[in-house]
Amino acid sequence: MQVNVSGRHANLSPEVKEYAVGKIEQLGKYFDRITNVDVIIDHENNNDLVEMVAHVGHTAPLVAKHSAEGLMLAMDAAFDKLERQILKLKDRLHSRRPHHGAAGPAQAEPQEDEENLFEGEAEFEKQL
Image (cartoon, rainbow, N blue to C red; front, side, top):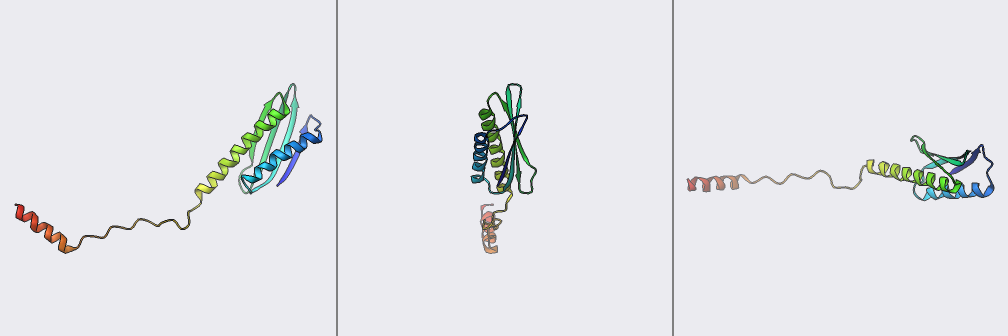
């Protein structure tokens, strides 16, 4: 998985980049089809905005954004949002897969023999 960390209107220290890469690499244990994740960090006024865009297989990219007063708070919250989206996608993909080896359609119960039907009719006529 490739991780790109960039800053808009902000200079990023190597520690921030390492923290972001470490958080994103944790997503690999949940889903192995993640090909690329872009982390964009923007500093506006007193808030830090973190946007994470994950490219997963042949689906639309997953996007998680969060703004907070602290960079680490914003990064953790955006990571949690992205993590939930990936788990939801994984669950949706696995629930659509056909189950191999599952029991086929239920078999019909064997029909009663004709003799049993006639015996039942005879008993019914006796009661009349």
